[in-house]
Image (cartoon, rainbow, N blue to C red):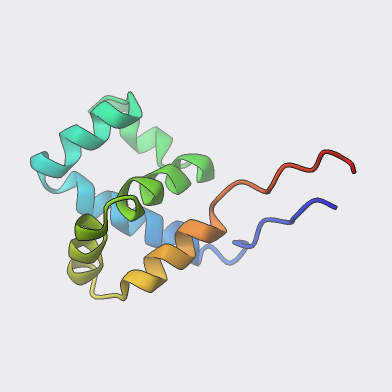
Length: 98
């Protein structure tokens, strides 16, 4: 049975967009992110419309605890809320039909 995406309300995407804004406001955060994602500044805005990309934004932050904590503090939210949004934006688990 396939798992249905659990992010229809948009709040996970909103958190991811806020995280992306936090990343983009500082060159020391932005350029490593761009290098990791393979994007350039011009394509960043268009990529932000893709829920899969937004999951990758959260993946980038959640994968580094000090960055996660700094981001959550800057956004005045709990790190757990960012992690929960990250979980909801992950692709559905593979269903091999068995």
